[in-house]
Length: 635
Image 1 (tube, rainbow, N blue to C red):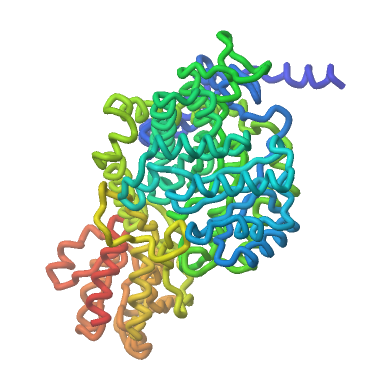
Image 2 (cartoon, rainbow, N blue to C red):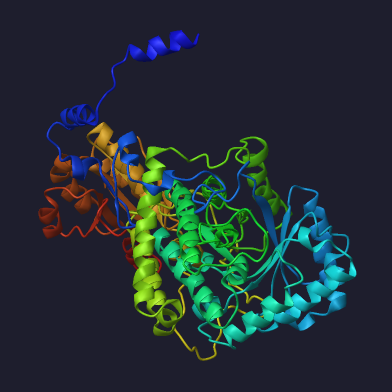
């Protein structure tokens, strides 16, 4: 059998890259290869249409095995296991405990409790964790930053009282001084002193990580992938630098840092991001020459602690691309994001419920979010193969490219004084906010697609009282938007869909849902295509759309539109036929409804001279155009 296979392969001569390029060039029929097939990513590098074995030459991404420094291929050697995490905002410790016990029986093996600082005491912790076998589940906690040391002391006391084997306890406390600056604009407390006290307080729990890099915040604000990674590395390095300068051993600091990343919908680039993140962070930590504090066989050439260089990664699906309308599409977004993160080798994962944008998630939406991960484990077996992306010419090159872009950003920040200085100057905030604006503009122009929002909306969907939720502060009280003065600029968290949602809510609230009538005439293929385009375009504002099979004359079409009580009449035909049909249709309508031409014909100037003002096509800003229509139709 083996001989037959060998003979089969020998029957086919290898194809060189030059031969591939000759075939591609011939098929392009004179078109420019670079312009036609090379993808210019938003991350600042180009992606070729195909890669071959020779494209791996010189890449350092293929030099190590899984579980080996610099951990590009993962920190695990034998599997791709990750923890299924669910967050619980604690209003009542007893109710939160009951919920935790319930979901632990439904596939969750990592819990995150958001606790109120003002209620913290020993009884609170005992009630919250009653019946939870802490040795079998990862426990993560967050509270107001000024109370993290108190929380650590309470947890240590509780675990010691219960006589747990501390070497089996894993979890985290979410202390992040710099995230407070990004989100609230407040520089509160002394980071070094708090971090030192926190590390000392948590010392009896060796596998608890308490210094966090919440790069998820950048993702939720719309940052590019390379920006999130580059800033995260500088963020983590700032903690390493300041705390080692304060006398804490590098190995101790590194082992207390946890990275919390977001996950965007760019499937392959996100896989590459997590692989690159581990490699770059391992190299950063190694420069501090962390000394191994115990007898361990995972040491470098100079005896440095390689375990300290392992990046602990929690990932969460981003909220930037979540939508209120057609919310079940969020399940598709979060599913691909979850796939990226798990194939990329994260340690734990939170999938956001599809309805979190407009209501507090209920049992149904939380169950779907849990099951999205369980399907990847139990049916797709994503947890069985270590670094399944390894060897892919494409992903290996993406990994190298995203690493290069992120590293350049990291070096730029370090050259200018590091992450803390950049925050105080507002540099990080301004760059990410500019990206947020740029991406929302791309959504407005349909250069970035949000299915169900700016493309293919549900024509008949209504909000029915749904409104986007405002974010609460970390301790559960009050609005996330503080009115007090800010020490530094903050990030803007406008979601990509927010302006389209506001537009659609405006339409619904007016009680005057405009009716758009498709006056289809002439060339069958073109009128159908443009009617479909126009229906999708106008439905993005919540308008009622009426499509038609076609009319013999524009007068018949206008008469039918008036019988349907249309507020908008859209002429749908071919560019060549607009010279014949547009002006007669406009005159027949005689101002009784808004008149729109679907397209940008060569005769557009002549049509404008005749008084026709409205044209919709792929080059217009969909959002701004619909805002103008709303201003005219709803007033």
